[in-house]
Image (tube, rainbow, N blue to C red; front, side):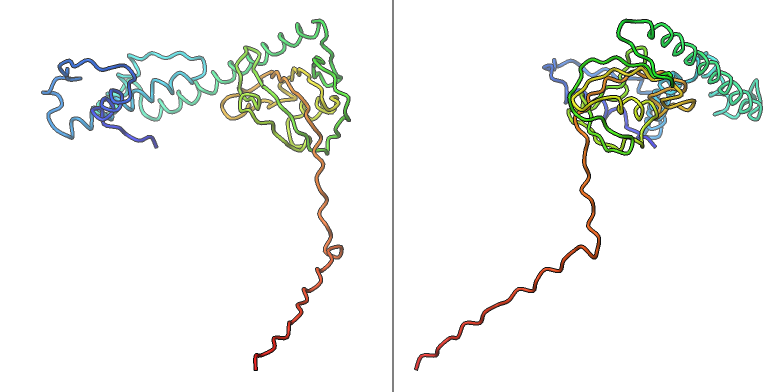
Length: 265
């Protein structure tokens, strides 16, 4: 749940944090004092501002990205006041659910088609190689180290983008490489990184079925997304084998030598 912040406090915070030198001007009330007659009115208005701000952001994520703000406000106002609505609550819930399902399917099909079109064009570009699974890659730099196995743990730097150039993850931007078992990532990574000798840099073009599939991931990778990864294989991390209990030798007990202390006569 988001914290509700009273408007006067927000205004004070913004003004106090501004790097620009403030010019003393008479304060202009945000709304007429006759509207905000008491604390309840102020709280109610502030709540409306917060709800409207959140809703305006969330509505942009609706599949298709289209909405009629005037009708949204009319429906909201009628429901809040308990007035009769053009559509019953039950019918509204059913229609909204069906609309979202249909719009998501259309959006997913569009993503799928865009990815397939991209890969079909990309495979004919100079330097692009294609594996039997459909994974595409370009060798940017060839290292002289060993190639990892699927069971190995690797250390890499990478940047992941959508085909429109949107960066959704990057160890490079974080300034810290990442280590992970190669058989615990998406199939495109498991297959692709095994092609790389340590010290290499490859660019991978990963079809959705070798990536995050029909579900997408984390809200930042839509369903059916074709992904692009720039990967640098830094090392194959060798895990130290754990010693078996019987192999652990018990440390010898420390011996102490008591020194005789002669008493003075």
